[in-house]
Image 1 (tube, one colour):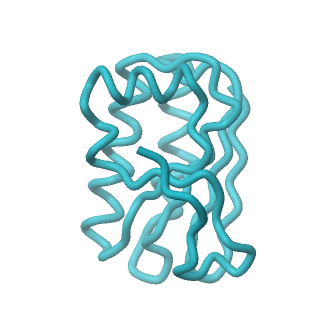
Image 2 (tube, helix red, strand yellow; image 1 turned 90 degrees about the vertical axis):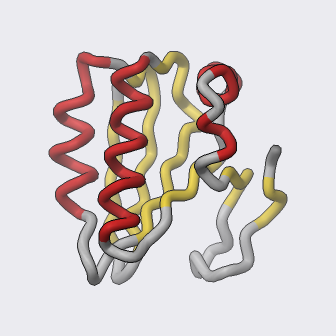
Length: 116
């Protein structure tokens, strides 16, 4: 799993590629959850490159959601791959997380083409 985290002034932008599973859950938490706080409460997770997700990956997403909510932020899933979309739908978590195909360059409120 490749995990890329870019924390700008108010958004934690995460890009994941490969297998999102139990083998990378601790690294995900260390890199992503640690960046969330009152000054940076919103997280955008790009799942376009995710080839596989298991229950550990879902637990990571839920922990991210809880940390963001506790800090007054939101989690947005971006460009969800088919394998990730299927597991989110099967577990009914697709209704819990906002899903978009892309985000605006300024990361402002203008999100493009909300998927459902």
